[in-house]
Image 1 (cartoon, rainbow, N blue to C red):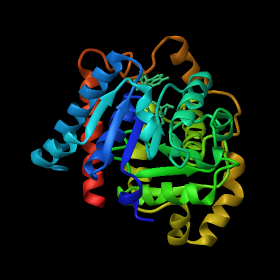
Image 2: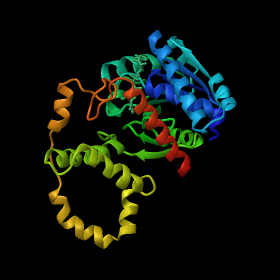
Image 3: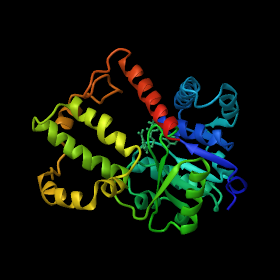
Image 4: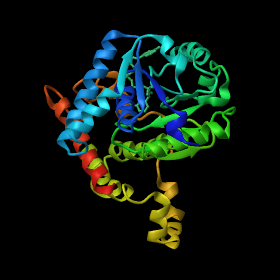
Length: 313
Ligand SMILES: NC(=O)c1ccc[n+]([C@@H]2O[C@H](COP(=O)([O-])OP(=O)(O)OC[C@H]3O[C@@H](n4cnc5c(N)ncnc54)[C@H](O)[C@@H]3O)[C@@H](O)[C@H]2O)c1
């Protein structure tokens, strides 16, 4: 399938953190992108996010000023739901609430052309559950990105029970066209792949801190300077091959039973949650983000991610 012939207009719903970023990615590859939201202030926020991301990308040498201007000319904004009427591809990145997603998809899947491909960027809601509100579910699937998506290249493509192979193939080809790394999640399973791996790791990280083995800072350092460096280049199964099946088999025979098997949310996380310490967005989480520290932390994260992306591309 020729992606550019078949997909001319991409409509992205939700001009938030994820939607604003998607708009830049597709616009960069020459697609005509429309960013839809129901709130005027969200559209304004989306424009601000795009401009901030573009500024950072220019400063990091990821894109030239002219390329950035060209990209921006491919993005339009709308609050008109009729904009979905001639969409070829829809990406939904609105609030993570099933009632809101159902209301959206009920309307949009009726308005959009029957051959349009429909995707949701839900973090964790069931694809099959969201699909209950979708007219012609065979063209609907999950397309889960990682924040910040304009820098992190992974895209999880999640099949619902009724999604056709043809739909999945088109989503995969589009992801490849925009130079992302798609993976196919063949079953609609909670957390898909990335979040299952992430939460398995978090369970152990909480266990280590709560049992006084190491501090939050030191656990973060183990990931940043140890495992994270490795996993940016090779995956867990490749790691076993390099280390030796025998080594991992022998260590595994005593290590798995040592690991936390908690099925509860950690107390550490619960206490912060109950204190309203939500992290960067409230100025306090595991670390202090008061004053301008939050803004600086986000800028540093984005620049560091870009450096890794550049050096590994
Ligand atoms: N932020 C992340 O790290 C991340 C990562 C992966 C997936 N996701 C998922 O992506 C989706 C969006 O997340 P976000 O972080 O961009 O949220 P966000 O709050 O930054 O943006 C959501 C946007 O959706 C708009 N919106 C709400 N209801 C709408 C409706 N009915 N129609 C159109 N627009 C509507 C809001 O005005 C807002 O601009 C969620 O499903 C979230 O779980 C987020």
